[in-house]
Length: 274
Image (cartoon, rainbow, N blue to C red; front, side, top):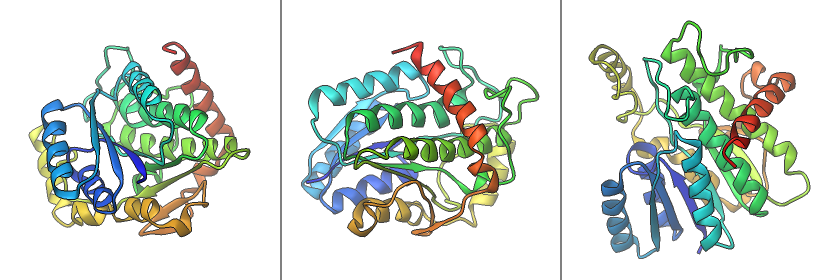
């Protein structure tokens, strides 16, 4: 059976991805903050789909948690087929983690960066799938302010984090040229989930009005499931997918100079904890 890791797996797109992969007989490794929800999901999946499901309660907004999760997996698994970086959130107020990193950048980017880098360097045949968003368009990274210190606006911080997911995907793809691993990213669609409900009532109201017109979480998981379940795309790498088809990401996302700045900055941050 294939072995697949899913981050942010207890609700929304991540939950439907877990169910979809289990239905296709993937053994699962699920990671999320909520231990109770993880254990309930583990029992449900193992009973319903007759697959193995192992759970790890980690706060992936912390670099140390991402590293420790990777070390747990490395000790136990010689082979991983898929890493699906799905965790993410939007924070309308600027929040700093206990490691001193702005939380949007920490959760939405550094988790993807850390796990993608460590797993791609240690599992030569892994396929990595990064859940980005069309929100990455019409925004640029602030090269001298990657952690959104000045004039913080939550929506723009989120958009930049989704652009960062694409930069990370393209950069790692360039570094995978000598092995058989692959990495792609995708837009899941405008999905009606609990996403963004961690903010003030006013923003929640506006977000829920917009999401009312969105697709279901299962529909939002379809491109991820397509990439994980379709052997015909297994050898494709360095692409951005939307509705199960590759398409061009934003013009800005192909800026190699900015991509290198982000990579070097992220690598320096990560090196403090390795």
